[in-house]
Length: 153
Image (cartoon, rainbow, N blue to C red):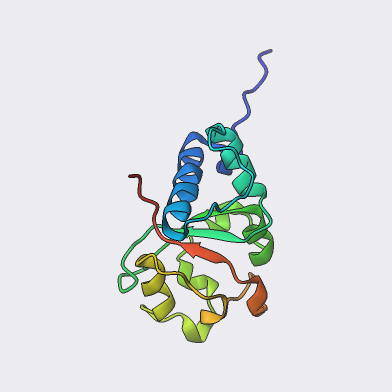
């Protein structure tokens, strides 16, 4: 009997490792400070992906789709803190249109927050309300950092 090979969790797949490297690089380039303090510049992609997923900060990444399109930007990454905050598992949150994380009244096809996120402008924590899986409103202090589609330079 052959032992079954276990697949890595979705946040540790090779694609997710590449995405984690992009997220850290783009954050550093955009804001001039590391997203995760103390992570060695030569850390392996696996370690970067593990640390980003385990970080206490709430992090979501969007695919960069036009906010005016249907369904608009979709989530392409959520770390453990985001999964806990939204009370959703990875397969449910990642791939979801990001507008569905907002309160129903703020789910229009375009929004200032979406436009600023896509343009890589910083999004203030109080710029929009968010709701979890049970539609409970999140306190502004817990709102996530949202980043648009990562680009490699």
